[in-house]
Length: 224
Image 1 (tube, helix red, strand yellow):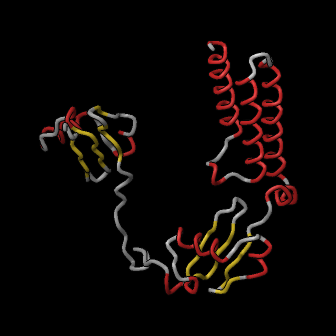
Image 2 (cartoon, rainbow, N blue to C red):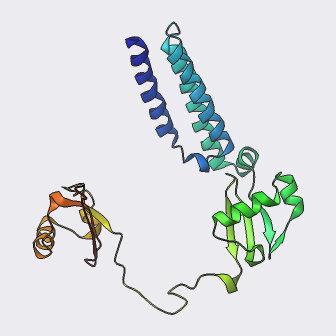
Image 3 (tube, one colour):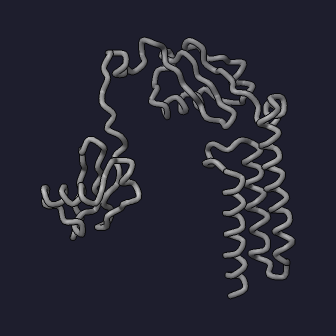
């Protein structure tokens, strides 16, 4: 049992390291070649976890081979458009000016329900409002609404708001988090002044965020 545990831990860190080196994206964003490599890695790593008689080197070699193969494919794809198209395919427009391209959806083997569900996930419930809908090479749908249905932004209204920056976590679970201080212009001195002014007890604070303009959100701990 102890040997199995050790082998599992070793294989876990090997696979994690290989995936990090290959620069894997989220599962929903994997290209076809990346998905295949991910599946093969998981299958190869699973076998020696169950068979202690199989030397780890027999698993390490195919894992490293797959890693090298994936890196090679990535390099070639960067330099060759034709190779990238062959390996990943092209993005396809399935809706133009509110009209479904039935030929394309048949080619992609998608149903109307699939299209409507993907649109709802983009907060679009009326297909007639869509200017373009594109199926990307990773299977995700990108949607561009018709101009009259697009959300109005501040630039359209000629407004120039000040950049308040991203709210940074300065306290989490009763502890001060200094790793993001630079992003929101926070220092220990500034934080101390805020804590004293608003009578905030760090130990009793579940979460506190602050942006560059000093806007803050404080959530106290529930002691129940």
